[in-house]
Image 1 (cartoon, rainbow, N blue to C red):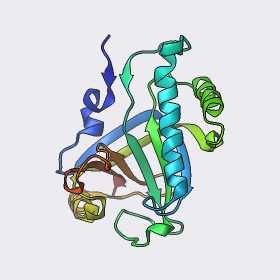
Image 2: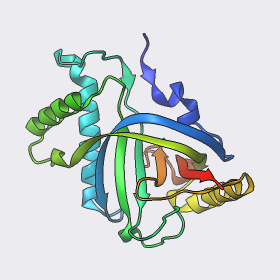
Image 3: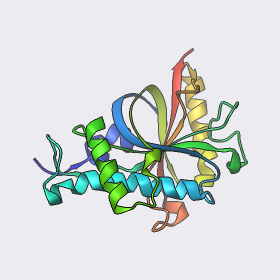
Length: 213
């Protein structure tokens, strides 16, 4: 069995075209960290990323010391994702300009062999390795997004409204409507590392929950 790269194995989830499409998103498991504030300036957002990657790579590298979980297989750590919302607003990715008002759930998908027990063991391991890191903020979560419309956005994050506008037009023309709620959010999947990629070349999957009219 070769190394699984979820971005390549599940192109329908991670490699949509720039043209909006409908997708039924199945249940997946994630390690998540919740927080609030502007991701560009928030220390808690940077801490969240450190926790997520720390736990994800603790699980991935468990094979190096013989503590890999039952059913372990070789894989590429999936990309960072984010669910974004604003209190008392049906946030659609373009109707709130003040980023300090953002609330977010940052997350990384986990392979199918990862269970709550595997997650807890990874959290204990990382806490010993990095005692100053608040790994207690992390949660293990199963999520089924269901019916969504998504599109690939290429360019700076601040230019996302252009892509979202096309998505909204597609939703309207095809008999759907947005279905944002306290459990269904504006969703972004980050396929590029902004530290190593020019803003114009960033690739981000944008996904919105929808329902039939």
